[in-house]
Length: 328
Ligand code: F6P
Image 1 (cartoon, helix red, strand yellow):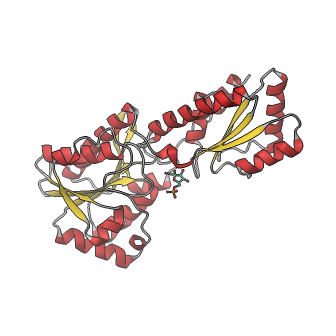
Image 2 (cartoon, rainbow, N blue to C red):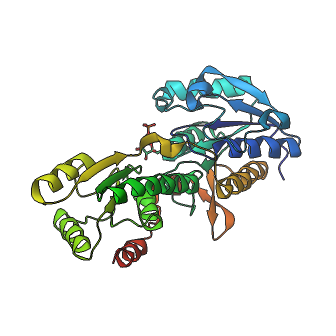
Image 3 (cartoon, protein in one colour):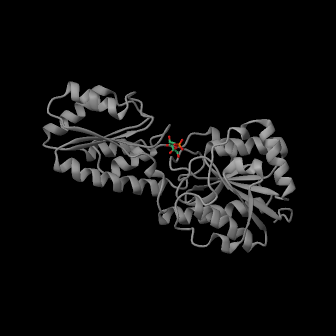
């Protein structure tokens, strides 16, 4: 292993996700294990440009494996998108003698890191942290599994009231550009229909499907709608549409929102975060840079940051068919 890395910085950037703290803990403790100094960078790239750093040791990360959010805080930085911002960040790193960075975040975080690496030859490794699971090069991003469990729990509760009042619920879940959360919770919580950005169900088919389920004797229904679904109508517009065009439906809407990003990480996310942190630090020690660590076939693998950003995460459309059969 290369001896050149003596001090590593770690930051979280973009939307927070459960498991980020467990990943910070893993990075800090792997550094301690290998006698490498570790520095926490506050508020992502914003704190990087300001030199908002804090020395961390193994004890600084006690009692955080179970906590949602990120103790280092997060931000979406516009200034780091400018050359001046990145020059400033680089000078702060040099001044603090930080040799490499571990970046925990999503594609925006990785794009910034990749450009920074290209401009300054500065060593960076990414850890994918976002509930959306929209990153190529890993079957799971940190926070995805926890979010699925949080959302299924919320839908189960909504089901109680849907069933008691014979109602149709449109439930909006997160996933700006992808339907991973919607697809999985749709199957896991037994939805009637799932609307995702990757497939246009079409209003006619939705209406048809609701009628069919009524005819088959169902008195309540749940339709999961991903934020960025293709049908082109918001959950509120869908409600209006059913109110205006279909008789006998008592429709309600529930937008789950940011509660999906919070909460204590699942065991799966804690284990994943711990593995990713070890792999990230040891990859930097081995001289690897400009990669993202990811879970592929249950192994920790490296994918170039550029592919992680440009590649498309694979969505399991088979789940749509499973959902259709289960909705019989
Ligand atoms: O974390 C990803 C995500 O949850 C998206 O699904 C969503 O569109 C977005 O973040 C909203 O984030 P914010 O409110 O922080 O802009």
